[in-house]
Amino acid sequence: MKIAPDLQNAAIAPLADTLVAHGVDGVIATNTTVARDTVKGLAHADEAGGLSGRPLRARATEVIDRLARHLKGRLPIIGVGGIMSGADAVEKIQAGATLVQIYTGFIYTGPDLVADCVEALRVADAASPRAKPRRTARAA
Image (cartoon, rainbow, N blue to C red; front, side):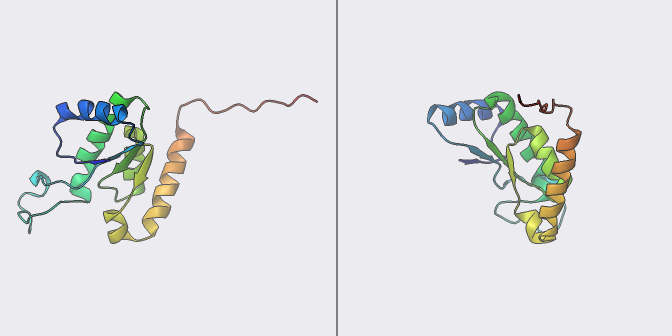
């Protein structure tokens, strides 16, 4: 199931509960937006259709955060929307995404974006304050 960033905040929790109740395997947050507030005044800002890329980043991350706080791990969340750099991918994971999907950023940046995301996520994971697994000696 893919949800739009245009969903009202109050509708996110009930939608998440519905997904869980119906056995949905995961949720993709978010799709394109029809909102134009982040591109107001720019050329082509009034064109019809879904908007993707950088203008979607902040709202997509907010939706991911709200979903993650409500779901508490009951469903995987695929974070999508405005991932134009490795830092953006880290932001989505830190907001609660289990995985990230890139599309618009890949179109504009190419395969280097994948390497940037992998490296940024590796560095963020290594710096994470969460407990690291301990190695234990095996019995002889």
